Image (cartoon, rainbow, N blue to C red; front, top):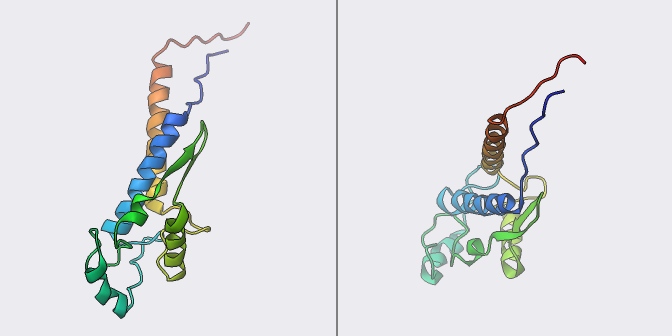
Length: 151
């Protein structure tokens, strides 16, 4: 019987890295690309809000561009909230979680129960896990493998 390569371990550090990368991906999709979780342009702001926004902003959210950024606080609050050896939790807390829900109710979904992550975020997870698998497979297959045929 041959030695079988071990299944790659996805440790706590890996899941923390994934969480941080997904948070960054969501920020870019939202603030730079102005896209929702379905990769569609965000619904326009109301005329009144679009006119008020440049006057009340304190961050980089000026103008009528729909990027869910008035002060930047909500997107800064998106963080890796927890991780273990086999999972990661990201999200918002407090008033910023309420803002995310309000924006979803207004037709500007950063995340939803039916689609928590965009296809781009899922692709990022796939790329990162494939890299880990390949690195571990390369390490395991670099070792001599002994096969015994027959008895």
